[in-house]
Amino acid sequence: MEKESFNYFKQCSLCGTTWETAEDFLNDPSLQLNGYQFSAYAHRFGNGNGLLLFTHKKGNCNTTLAIFARDFKENDFPRNKPHLEDLVKG
Ligand SMILES: [Zn+2]
Image (cartoon, rainbow, N blue to C red; front, side, top):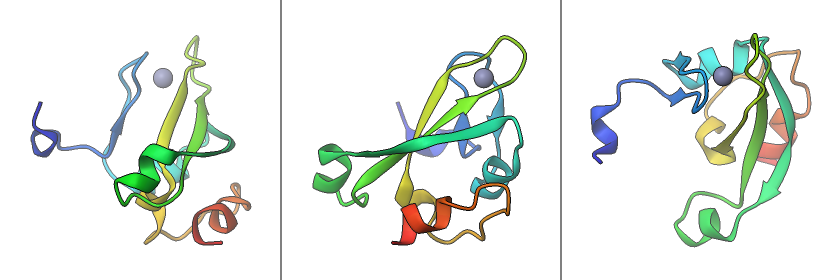
């Protein structure tokens, strides 16, 4: 499994939707920010301290997607997800 072979930022594990960039992901209104979870795994491997949990509200897809908070560090945060910036940068 070569991570480099994927040309998108994230794929929904249930419905297969892909987001090309972190920005696309953040701006998708069908993704609802659910919370933040400390991750010892992320911390250990230098990926920051936690995961952001999103619910994909699209059709019948209600799956939860977990992304390293650090992946969003360079992004501007959309107004509909006001707490995100605090979680990632705080
Ligand atoms: Zn989905």
